[in-house]
Image (cartoon, rainbow, N blue to C red):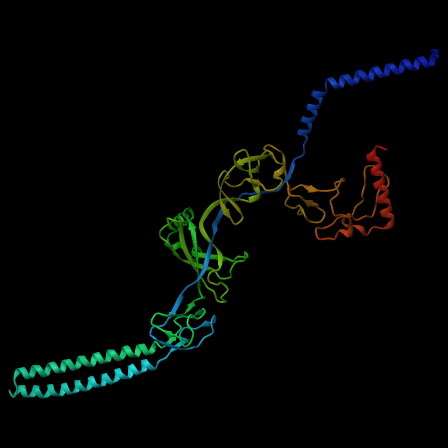
Length: 479
């Protein structure tokens, strides 16, 4: 059963239907032109994208040294094997194993009595030879006088002269035998041939040693040598650089070597490259070099692994860019520079070796360009950039916020720098929390987690903060 509507009700129903038709027509019109509107909005958004804040460094050509490091081993400048030179019983040792001995210090003694007896025998033989020589001289003097008065024959004279010459030779032979015996006697005293550190003994006291038996080893520790090798290309580059400098310009700095210890520290004393091999090792393809280093405190022990830094070349008017400025583009190595129009421009570069402040650029930059060194993750060729003022405080300074790896400044929702005391606001909520230091709500990497449970804000502020959280939760649920 239908009930007729009154006139006012029928008019209200008609008006409502008419309004719905108008709204539906507007929706259809908007859907029909949505593609063009959306594309236009995106294009406008891209055109209105704010410029990227970047740091730049102006490239200024200057003189740079090309340095390189190579692994090497330390060895004593001299290592001497102390050996016995005569046969006998090792009588006594005068040093402690492993201690440093000075040149000329007594190390061992070999029983000298047999050698002293030989010396005494040789002295007696020498005395006998000298007595025979004196007799021969007297005979020669007498025979010569008799020959002058024709009292003796010429044959007798010649025989007396031969006896004199034989006696002289016997004296010289006896003197040589005595010298040899005295040398052998001196070899019973084994002395240090140089200053250095001794090794473990090889023979105990009381043992019979023969000529050539090794007794100990002495290694010179001051100075020491560092042996290292250069690859073929580096060795050729260094030789060309030295040849271009000329003999007069080959200074101590050119031959200087810096020793890098295994922990990364530099050894205090600088080394000097005193030997460069003139040929390339065909098995390893390297060239052997040697550096001499003063080792006053014996800090460099022979056999220790170190790295040696030397100068390969010196470039004048060289262009150097920081390592952070280099990026990989479309199949090319590139850097971004700021163009005259204030936009980022990708420049293809050919990189050379590493230098002290970055990377050497062989081609692509000539000097004077403003190379972008931050914000590279947001850059594209042709993007608008804004160079930061040099008077601006560092990014990590108070009041400037922190920086992430991409160089973007991190801040809170209201663009308030992190770490400052400020009012915390959420949307248009009237219950703003005042007096809370956001520094209290953040944890440093070393701060204990329970620090969050004890904020220094007042109880009233904490209550207001909880009220504000509840409000935000309700808004998220659509209440």
